[in-house]
Amino acid sequence: MREIDWYFDPISPYAYLALTELHTLAPLARVRMRPVLFAGLLGHWDNVGPAEIPPKRVWTYRFCAWQAAQKGIPFRCPASHPFNPLPWLRLATALEGEETAVRRIFEAVWATGEDPSDATRAYALARELGVDPECLGDPAIKERLRAETDAAAARGVFGVPSLLIDGEVFWGADALEFARAFLEEPRLMQQPDMQVGDVPIAAVRRHR
Image (tube, rainbow, N blue to C red; front, side):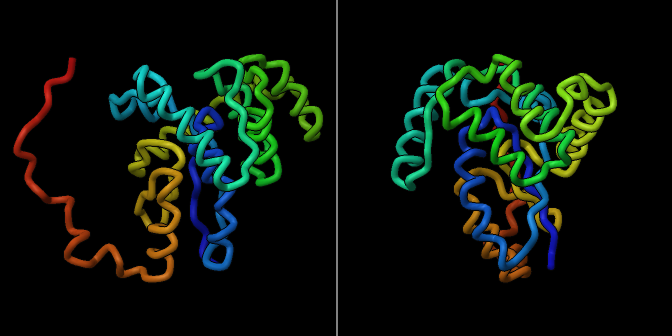
């Protein structure tokens, strides 16, 4: 069976919503879950996250809460957001992106309404999952997460959640159908309408 990569950071509510739908790809591929630091991707691409634009921040929370309700997914906005996701990411890294652990992490952040910036909660979950909380400060774990983030950026990953399939990036919680279509028809990207990479840039916005 084909193996594909799913890049995530528990700071993203869109990644939480996408996680609940990943099982739909199971007949076509095995998904490897890869934790990455969203802030690292933003820095690499000189971008800002949704929560850094005040009206977009409000929209994101409202839309994700609404969409979760439509799909029957437990959802409660965390007590603080954005927050430092590093303890949670390092836990996912220590457990090598094991699916059950990743789901527990996302549920702890997005289904409880508690404060994910309280690192003791990540440590408590680590114990539940059989991980010594001390290892979350291990330089080797930190370096693995950093290397994974750098490698993702080098592969063209610019946000979370993202699927990487045969070098093609499928970004966002709403990209699963597109990804499934590509898995079913690998020549999809060869169609004329998909040849957009060489379209000339006619105007460049000045960065502040």
